[in-house]
Length: 216
Length: 386
Image (cartoon, rainbow over all chains, first blue to last red; front, side, top):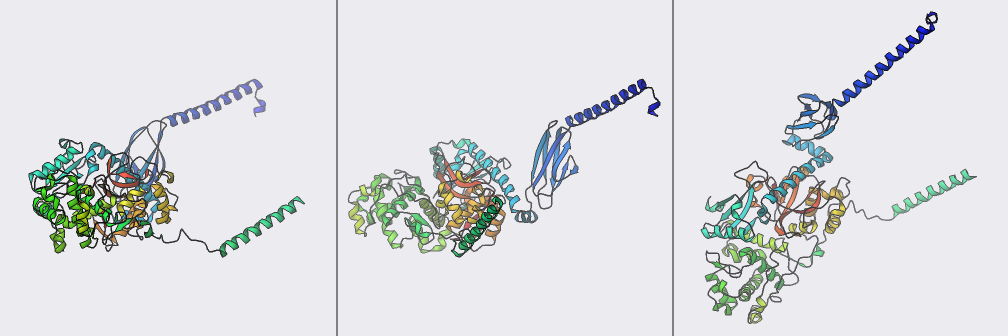
């Protein structure tokens, strides 16, 4: 049938067809570029445990793997029997891939048993807890340098430190406890010792207590 | 021809390998990795061993032990202040009550009777009274440092052991806590900077000899402890394996030479593992405890270590209530701090290599090898039973 068409028209038709194909290829390429530029990726890596239920903005996704999301802030939530729920807010930019490591704290025997059964993965969890300890310990010592000299024990007074009674949820706040034998001079001797180490007692939250047998 | 030669060479090589392997099997191999670590107690010959299982640095004779005892005693009582006055009756370098001072002067070093109170006497005279008194009592108690310490703090508790755990009026620690603290401080080298000048007091040697001598008189300074593992001594061993400063790396090369040597020896199964055993907190604690008091301690993993401690109430007291986890008030030197995720050793305050003070030693997986640290709330306390 094409053989009966005028060669001139044939050339025009071929040219037109080529243009259509080129346009289609270009459009697909354009769509691809546009699609890539408008998304971001969250790389979910569930370590402890390695099989929690993960949701991103309340939509369930795989516990491990990459998920395309729109750029911006997203809420990643993890749930698993035996572990405390964990929720993390993540902000990811256009075209970026952000790793989201899920390490959950055990809430009871089921979680502890999971750690016993997965000693290699449990090490990853210990790394996180150990790192937190280091940071808390260092920050607390930097904020309250007196504590590294404690506990200080003398027969009639002793100085200890512990969780802040005024700000119990502040991880770097402490309360200094001076336990004394009952005489006012013991309190003064304890405070003098703090001064002798180069610290100002008024910089610290100090409480005075009597030893257990003498009552508080 | 070439191909044939290669085949012959290959066959020869295989035969040689098999023969070598067979020969190796005939030679007895030291199965180091499978052997139960052997604790070499003979390495602790410079340490005095007391009946309660505490090793105390002291050198070769009573004299050195008494010097160390007095250094720690004066440190514990008032930080070594010669003219110290507590305001509640206790005075001087050793906080003698006035009546006790008169009695001790009369009995052990009469020249001291010239001074009505301890803090009025020169340092060497105070040292002479204390040195002769405690040299004598050391012999009476057959070298028992626990009883020696109790005799200074609350003597009646040596006669009536039920009084070891009460708070004497006006005091904040029990006789048992007092004595244990003295012994632990002697082991950790605390108070070493306090001079004991007894030998400079007039006629000191004459009065000392009247009580059978003390083994060399009061040296000016106590002898330093040797490095490495000390059987029974968690604190000294932990401090020898850990850096006395923070800020170290996580590889084998980052660890102290003692830890590089001791960890594979006492904790070979962990050392053989590839996932960073050198910075593992549980491996560090297990190495210290295995080397000192319990060769069966769980070698790695805080969850398993808690299981082990709980299942061995014959070996460990395990405290989980808030009075232990939220405050340093009930901690004792040598306590194992552990929770699900991290563990370390509470040593009590010591001066680090950077002149700062620290009270613990810890490793942290992926972060750092054993190094100086400070106690932080939130940890259960495991205490080795004496």
